[in-house]
Amino acid sequence: MDLQLLRAHQIQIKHQCHAALNASEQANATLRARNQELFWASIQNFLTAVANISKACWGQRGRLSAERADLRNSLSIADGSPLASTDLRNHLEHYDERLDRWYRESARRNYVDFVVGPRARTITGIDERDVFRFFDPETNEVIFWGEHYALQPLVDEIVRLLPVVTVESSKPHW
Image 1 (cartoon, rainbow, N blue to C red):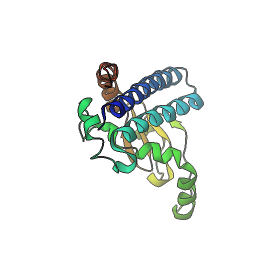
Image 2 (image 1 turned 180 degrees about the horizontal axis):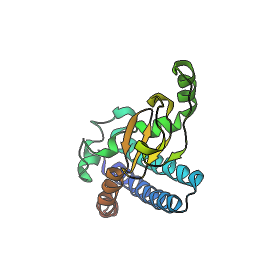
Image 3 (image 1 turned 180 degrees about the vertical axis):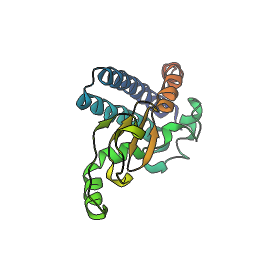
Image 4 (image 1 turned 135 degrees about the horizontal axis):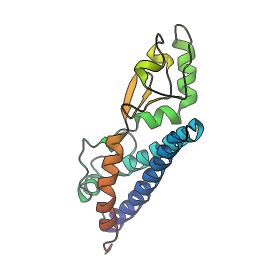
């Protein structure tokens, strides 16, 4: 990868790390304040920033994985990094499609959304495909259609990445 392009990607990743950490802090604050509207907006902002890091490192749907290997190597990002997946962000970004699909396929059409609470004790007897945005504060996971997405590994990886990308992105591009 050309050095100038590498530095430009690194600078973008640095900005997205800051955006993700700011959104994570806001999510924690709004969770404590019990403001679900802002909590879910913060989660969506966090996931968008994480997805932007993922797309910089692997391309959309991993299409540029080989071409971006130098970038990942420069930042010590492993191929198995939690940053690689954009599945949860895609669920939220394409929410309209998920609703249409749910309406066509759901047996009972129960609709559970925007919930914060321990999954095991909050709602029972609901098909997993009827549960959209659900945050379990005991596990720090977002659950969407029965799929569990741990947020802490993403935060931990960004905390690790930020000082690395800050140093790397400040190096000369010539």
